[in-house]
Amino acid sequence: GAKQDGDMRAKAQLSRILSPYRSKAEEAWAVIGSMWIEDEFKLKVSRELYEPFSFNLPGESYTPDFLYLLEDGSMVFCEVKGSKLQKNYRDARSKLRAAAELHPWFFWAQATQAGRGAWDFEVIKP
Image 1 (spheres, helix red, strand yellow):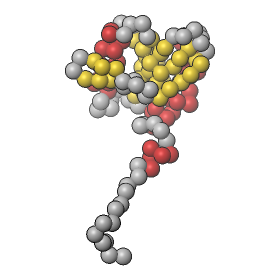
Image 2 (cartoon, rainbow, N blue to C red):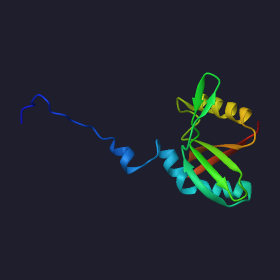
Image 3 (cartoon, one colour):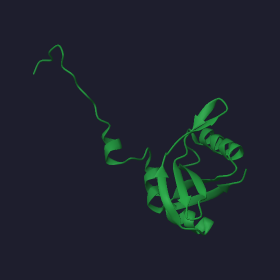
């Protein structure tokens, strides 16, 4: 019908309802990430959290994609990228490296899709 004064409309972001992840790469990593982390660190993952909090960096903030709590209490933050060619890749990479430098008591890693279900995985050394 005709729009009347006082009509309110809301637009739902259905993609966020169907999937909590911001990208297809993050969604794919969520399925296998714990296995990669366990293989790399030789410890069981006791908890996986998606974007649990942000770090304050000089002049900006940074929200890692995943946090893995390991059975020994260690914490691994992992940044996930769909490609090294995506537009925000370099910015996210520099934030990841800055966070690793400022918080060396955590482990930091990056997982990048390499095509056809393959991944490049790198532990960032401060």
